[in-house]
Image (cartoon, rainbow, N blue to C red; front, side):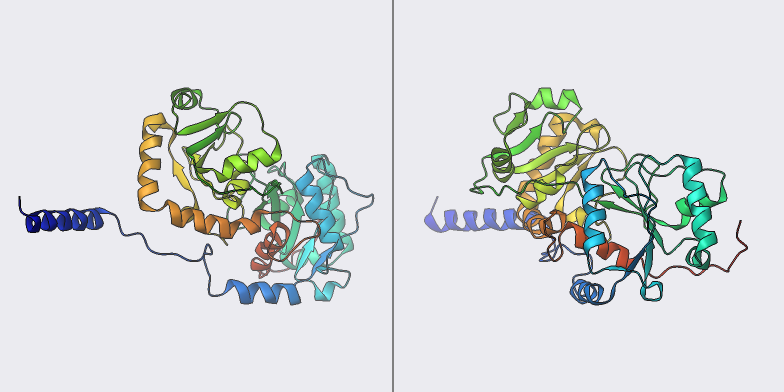
Amino acid sequence: MSTATVTIFLLLLLLHTVLSKPIIPHLTSPYLNPSTISANYDSMVKNFKIFIYQPKTPLTFPNHVESLFYTTLLDSDLATNVSDHAHLFFLPFPPDLPTRSLARLIRTIRTDFPYWNNTLGADHVYLSCSGVGYESDRNLVELKKNSIQISCFPTKPGQLIPHKDITLPPLASSHAPTTNTTTFLGYIRSNWVNESSIVDELRTSPEFLIETEPSKPRIYAQRLASSKFCIFEYGAGDVSGIGEALRFGCVPVVITDRPIQDLPFMDVLRWQEMALFLRRSGGAKELKRVLVRACWERHDQMRRLGVKAGKHLAWNAPPQAMDAFHTSVYQLWLRRHTIRYPRRETA
């Protein structure tokens, strides 16, 4: 075979390889609306005000994320005592408040203050990681259906109304990895995936790092940075590490058999471009096939977008621009234009 023939053959092979690779749109921003988020965020920082009802007794929250959000809100410039300046009204109550007591609280609010009846609670916000159940009491129905619920990710089934409610991202490690050299295709912690068959099949694979015991924070951060993908199981496993995975360059792979509607900042971030979502039925073989294909097609872009988005899932003390607290508040800002219901007689 002549040199010219070999050259042509290699060129044709290269052309075939290039053409057979799917064309993935080149994205530089992790935001759903990259052209407006900066201006909207700046407007929020300058103008947004939240009126906070005064609780009868100081509140404590067993969930650290709830407590962190509440105390940060109280200390922020967003809080106002002037109702005419308020865009939203924050209704604080203990997480263990009995249903009847909560109904009485709403009844008192609508009787003693004029704000609830203006919108039937649609411009009100409350914080509850455990959620509020549907009850026949009118006050609870309006609270659940109209007011914005701030939950924790992941939210209990049936406790979140998409497009109205929001979730707070879980706490993340502050330990940065020392290097980003990738050595593993996938990283799994035993509490992330409850599907034992997948873990058992992958345990002997040198491409996967599976840990059964929690690592020290700095080692854990290094594990994330040295893996292309981090595998989670939604619903049965622990998905609280998904934000850390993004921040440290490990593309989240979420095993689920139903759509996920409670990811943090779903109306801000392009989650579908930063994470993979797979069905449980495929097993370990399908998982490996998808990961290998994703490495070839889009891993670098997903990782890059995820790292950019990671700052939004980090809780800082004191809070910083566009971190977890401010992005959670930004989602409230996007919901500040409420439907004005006709005024009704109070109960």
